[in-house]
Image 1: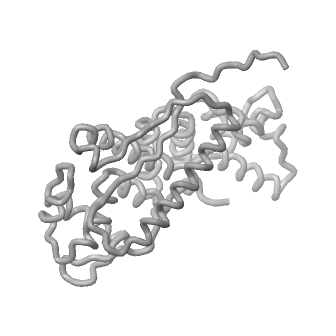
Image 2: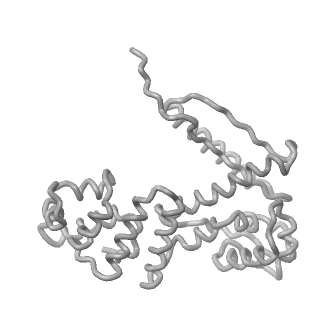
Image 3: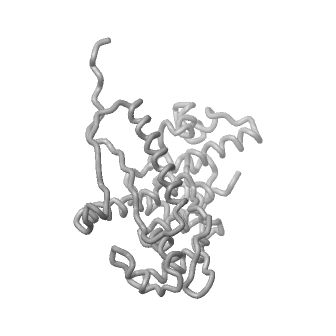
Length: 277
């Protein structure tokens, strides 16, 4: 079983603990629950399956039942808080605490580069601009951005992109993109991407006043759907995104950087269908 600091989903950690104990002894969900002081013999099984969550009260009992000690208890409790948190801002705080603990115990932080990449709109934009401005100084790249950014911020972004392999410097102040993707854990990467979506969403609102209709294209549809129709629309958006990506990849004479947001979100709660058959 992996060290606890390599986990970010406590449901998975609990399940791996159970499977390891079961493999080496006659361990059962009933025994696990009994050691942790739960009346229901299947309670921890439902937790592992993601059907219910541990609470601030029960997480300490489970940590003790698993024999965790020292920083392991702290990490486990932080992992529970991270998994249960509803707000992204709170989740980020707990995830940072987990990353700090993992770093202190010599574990590779797989989400660190992803979080830094998505921490600001500047990194993706600089990654696109630098290769089409060979020889340009950071101040010139900053001047090419529609949003306000300093030469120092561009310089820091270039250093990060080169250090992490997102850009490769071929000669002085001349860069080319690598094929590297932004990779992180299934728990951390969506959180990082949501942060970027918020920034890009704000820039989209700002673009309504900054640019003329000939320079931007913002449209929308307000529609009534059911779950089946929603899934069909999502699939169509995915195919549309792939087709646009193919069109863009075929462009060899890039002169400008654009952002495309595909947004589909509810404007009402789900209404029960009371129609008779």
